[in-house]
Image (cartoon, rainbow over all chains, first blue to last red; front, top):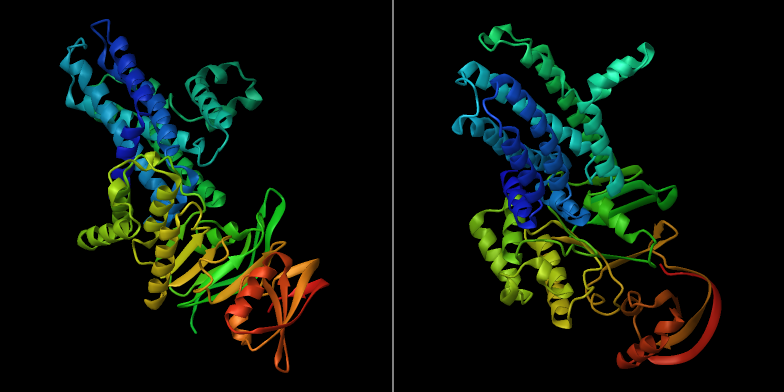
Length: 234
Length: 280
């Protein structure tokens, strides 16, 4: 699996397909912090949404790297379909980990905050980054080329899902009571936002962990669905 | 002989179209077997199912050993690979768990045999169709598979590379590898094929079915039945006393007549007949 991760990373670099998502991410972060000073928790919460979106973009690009025949050859050599797809997802996860590090460190290094980042705030914010990037990756995997061969369905479906995840609260407000709960099927991107913004950042035990667990469970469920779908596709 | 792979009632349906129907088949160890049939009859699908990279819609594929190493040469090896042959083959070998020392020697040897040494540091996407096909063949050979599956491997290969591939397949058989292949070219594999299967309308048989098509009947003498049975173009052979009745496709009849004469046989009669012929 380590070799396949290495292969995918080099292939992604040589394809230059990393450039659009990564440059967009850097621009978004730099523009976001162009006004100073910024509140720490709120800023990390908002930039986590950017991580979600960019991780999904990275995932859909990485999953489209191998042509179908190459995918078949690789699966045969690695000895299992799940191993192949998991290694692709781990590659994207590692890439998004670098992005979370940039989003976390950049405002600290360039003094963009109004106060010092404590360990507690830093830890929780980074966890939120990692959870949302994981969520973005598994959401995109469902719309990747390996499941949806049609580019319009693939990119269109992902764009629509990301839009729904960002606007879930607004949709919830305007929907009739009988169908309000439909928003629960949207990726739970905003569930940690309210929790983080209402948190004073002083005590780690004062934070509601349920939204974080909900993201983790949702991501695990989607991963399971993805692996089932690729098996059916095969 | 021991079975390497067994297929039980394997069927495949694509977009409501039945590609394969209820195929049952045993592939023996240490055997070179060809699957033949017209375009679009499901040969490639069957090979992918046997290789385990495609699931049958119904039925079962059983391998003698679950850890069996399978080499697969696709019909069209992708050209969009951004690595050089050397880099790519190293990755493939390492992914398959081959030790570095063995891998180095194996890659060097195979690149040399397929005369790819001079392009081993160029990106695969920049190579010619034939050289890309050679990389596709080498990746399947690199781990010394127990079962080697080749889907139209000769496509785009020059004659030297074709000969080299036939030699390598012969060597691998000596080492106990089972080889399963499809091909259109008539002569290259003829000398090493031990068993031929035909696909027709999604069904497989060791008989070639020609529905009501005109075929040539050659009555010959002084040739052994076993010699002519596997020739391309031979549909059916019947032995009557000291004569062999050969039903052959009209297209191949001239070549077959020539071969009979070259082997010292005599031709008693040639005629055209029509009907359902099956070659067993």
